[in-house]
Image (cartoon, rainbow, N blue to C red; front, side, top):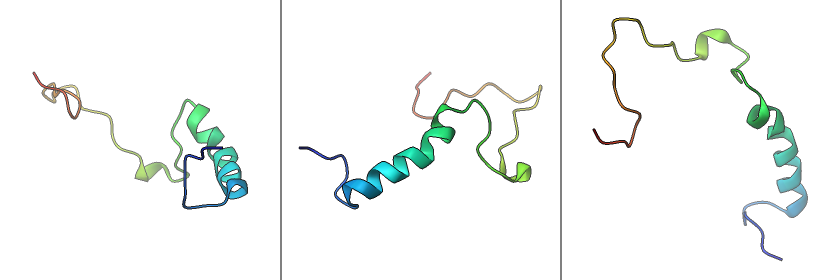
Length: 55
């Protein structure tokens, strides 16, 4: 049986996967403190392509 991680036991992998499901499936910020979230761009900011994309 092939595992995705060699860092943890299979039981720990399954437990961590279950803990992350809310963050992965949620449609909102995952931080408890609102001030830690990134700010949206301002209306007058220049358009910048996402990281890794070429113009």
